[in-house]
Length: 316
Image 1: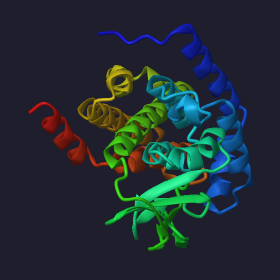
Image 2: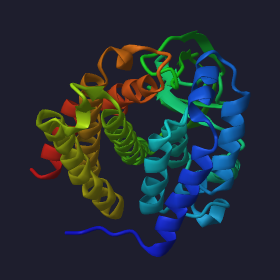
Image 3: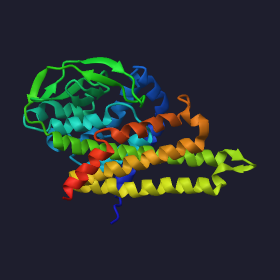
């Protein structure tokens, strides 16, 4: 089965690519990792202005959706440019807050991008809890509005700052839509990982075409071509998994998409690191920003084993 984007979706992807390409995201990420959020929040506002977060919010609450296919298209581009911030977590928050009473209170701000959100188990680590005014904690008795956060901890991915959510706070609902939020979060993570993998492949192909050994470009070596071909194949197989999951929004399909896309991105990251050599390890080299993100996304919102278990349950 083939999943082809329509003209409007392709134009949407191109417009996001152009906007993010001009934003200088490597510098934004490095500032974000130091707690300097001005550039990241300005970029967040531009992404929200393009309608990205509104795709996860119903039209009744000033959104454009729910439109999971368009959201997946957007998150591929966000991953391609390694945009920092609680992107997936804001999508998960929109799903958690979709119930009566909560939707009217919170979703218009999420759709407009004025209120970045993060989500985590109560007492657990949340992504960018210091930057998100809306902090949601999944507690034993339901969904709570966390009253604050603890110290910021370093993360493998500098674009993801980790903080513990403080216990207590207002109880928003005793029956949160946790399964729905997990499904949307995994879809967004899968699409983001696919974009990360595509960016790593593009950068690596360009690098081996310029690097010369024995008087010829490294990219002309047969072994290098095979490694790049394997990475390309894995990413191209992951793409229809992501788009197909966005069509069905079946938990098993979404879990399969997350496994496929995250493993493809991780494989591509390993190839990129090997073909770049020692320079790929250095934090000063921009490639590292995508390498660390590929690894972090692999376990975000469910490890590969968690997702494979979901696939088996869905086909039992």
